Image 1: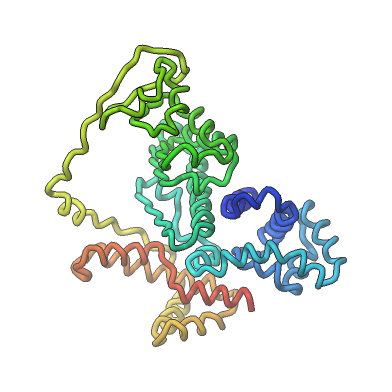
Image 2: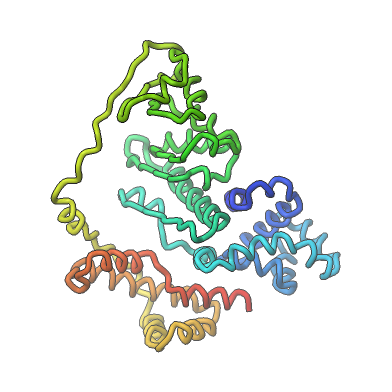
Length: 393
């Protein structure tokens, strides 16, 4: 887990990461402390560790990790002013993520509402939209986090016999933005994911985007058969290495639409061959009918949370404003949060199943899809903000 989080941060922080040795050391030991000692940890707890001396002491004084324990013991010998200076850089980095509203409402939750493994096993479709308005750093951070979660779910299928694994297609646009590993590390992920029945479509604009970590070689080494369509002049020399029977970049830059050159897996010369694919077919007329017929299936309800928890949920939901709901949840004792969350998810599941069974309650199709997604995976923003308030108080 620590290695995964460090990889996500490495990608999000970019070129400055490799030179920030002290920041890496602080973040790694902070993660070991939070993950090892904090029930239901979140990134907000990581920020609290770097800002709140009392919380830091309580969390690290009896830390069991043999690597992190002596590190935090040595820091306790320093004056608080000195520690504040030491923690300033990693604190600023973490705060940049937590300060962003979209990112905060993701990383402030101890449990994910999206079960990637379940989605793979059941053949579901997950679409992740990473709006550029999030900013490049936050976009890279959330994207890298999704990649780790997804590949982790794929690798967890080792408990299924190879012949019984459902094939899963993973499509990543601008994938170089979200890869937090070196070229060799990513090559290992590609190889292992393929063994687990995952096929990957990794889209990008040009090969120059894959220079970091030698990603070109990583991807090339994990693709046996290569099919090259018309290429830009800047990319053609790399593709010619895979097609030794071709001599000039014009053999690739002048290909017609829908034409391609195939390359075998061993790089040896072969007769020049051109493939021709079909043009894009028109969309079928009943496309709208097909879309409207896919309503989803009712899900089994989670365990009943108890009448007291449901009654408390209804009292919170009945408050007239989100700010009042946030204030009510802010006062909720930490030990009561699991029961409240169980009640809210139970209530959402009932409402989602009712909407699936009776789509006429929300006739607008787009609005209905959004509501089903919200009830299945969403978390009210006032709930997340209240959890952040409770952690930092």
